[in-house]
Length: 196
Image (tube, rainbow, N blue to C red):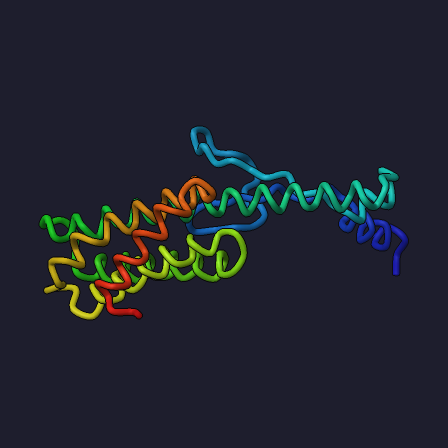
């Protein structure tokens, strides 16, 4: 193997990582060669631990801390993206019943709303933010009920979904402050849905 090829591979391993993009439809390395003007997409710097250990001579604890900070940043942006997606999807679902959009768009938005709720449930199950999982689960159940007969949903479900989406967004935005309020909402919704 040519020496240039070996050094080229090594350079690939230690080069700075591409920053991560966290948006509604994609979480991963930024694939764009050049930024687009007005995108407004925030990028998360991702450390390359091999580079840090080999040429920057950083202490392993500092490398681990840098990775943890980057991951926490990615998780925070994912949370915000899900929160914003829940609001947008709920508005689109409700707009169908005001005469805008197609049945296919409605079904797609409901599926995506359920998916967003399920991801929050998995992410917040157990621990200090279990109330977020509970309110997201209630929202998901109501969205699924609407999916069962999207052309003629129960009027209570249509009235409930924006409130549940709002409570879910609020609990993600302020996890500690929302524990008590979300607990009360979950109890009422569970009674309504007969989940107990």
